[in-house]
Length: 323
Image (cartoon, rainbow, N blue to C red; front, side, top):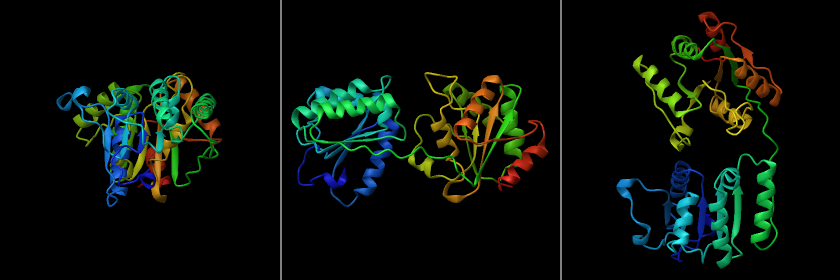
């Protein structure tokens, strides 16, 4: 986007649309660092807090050359003629699978594209995503081909193999949810006090709040993050990943989200460092989902023989090179 902007033209020329305000803010931070000496101006188009809210009718027209934001806010600005599309040269969709899926932000995204093409059918459209299912891929091909001029290119990287040699993965069968918490506190944390930062993934905000309170009450230093990880959190070295809840597809809870599992494992052992992943299982459904993950990646995850045994957890952490 920075390479396409004319710094002398005081009008929006590049637009990046993100599914969440957190990702928009993160991308804006990166843009400002990379464009620090270019003189290019930018603005974040995200929902405002109530304390900072300004009615759209009272907003001044956007003059920033790069705009990064969420589809709902951008669509409102375009509809209210506060964000001109006359000079747009490039439109970027980040996490395009979420932006253009049936259950995502498709309607707002399509409205924005149609508004742009009416003024500037030569605008370049770029769609980035770690995953594209067949339905989204077909829709993207059709909508871009129907709306915009010229040919288009598609680049798909082969599905990444789970080949994280430095990360040891384990599964721990626990009788119930309380036992999962005990494993975290009394086994993993107690034995691995010096292993570095640990990140625990849970399924719901309520689970995150309960787990946070339990660990904090026992004196552990805990931070809860909801939504997309901030850049500073992404850059931290994480040695331990704990899947308190295995990742599943939102619309099909009995099916694992293998891409999310891959990204979670990727938080550990970054930059070639050693790391470990503990998957906490407590019922037949967890066992089934874990088995599907193993089959998907053609791997066998080692089992910690006993959730009660200090010796078994110590051996697992030693094997991972963390103690």
